[in-house]
Image (cartoon, rainbow, N blue to C red; front, side):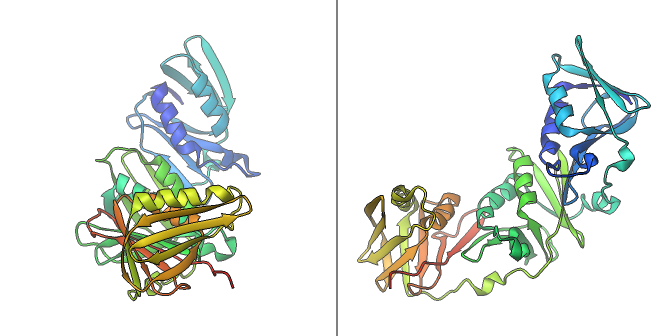
Length: 376
């Protein structure tokens, strides 16, 4: 293998695949990225930790001899990063010694046979161009606005991922951790067949990081029996699906309520942020919401102090006192962009639902939060 490529483009590609490289493995090949150089095509990089893989689209290079080699991801990335020039000569000999030269600098790294690198099923690459299309930044936002509700309990494996559900030409992204539900949806264009899959949170986090801020970038995603495939003009990410029955979240969202409150999101957010100041290290802190006469009174108390806040709201229904973990409310409020929001309550021990006031957001949202038990 012999080629010349631009340092910046290679470095960007290494940064893209590098986060997928396995950091805890006894197999040296899983610490590598697969480097493929093909004349007339370009350089393709791939990382695979057996649960998730990411492959770059080819980057331009002047390739005089095609070839492939597996190179230690961390070391190779550092070598490229520290090279002095704008262009890099890369050559691999018959013993898989890879020589990198730029300016007067020359570094060597020992490679492993490309044949040892875990192969990505060809079926996945063929399916990557088929499926559902959406703006990449929209999917990125939907993940960001729900991923915090994914369960961290490995005993409930299916809840450590997010449900991606396509029904009635609508994409729904749902996360559940038994204390709350985060839901986002958006209409898809065209005639989209119904489908669903549960994708691990780790893969979705990496997908979100990999998506650029280009508002025009599109992403295509599809599901095989065991994997989800996401493809943009820069990369293809494949992830093994989680098995099991996801919670029937629609049955948990109740349309019944006895109290409805419309409140300014920023005012409520600020009040909640003040309420947690007295319990910086106490993750069990609870806050009290007293809803009465178009006023919302928020109080919290711990060994370190006490807070009291009062903000205006519009209420409809019975007065209510209800207790929450403020961090669950904060996560939801930070994920919403609207100025005013609706909170719906049924009883002091029933979940609270947060919804849009106007229903005109690009992605529709719903958040459900289970309250805490109040004092006996």
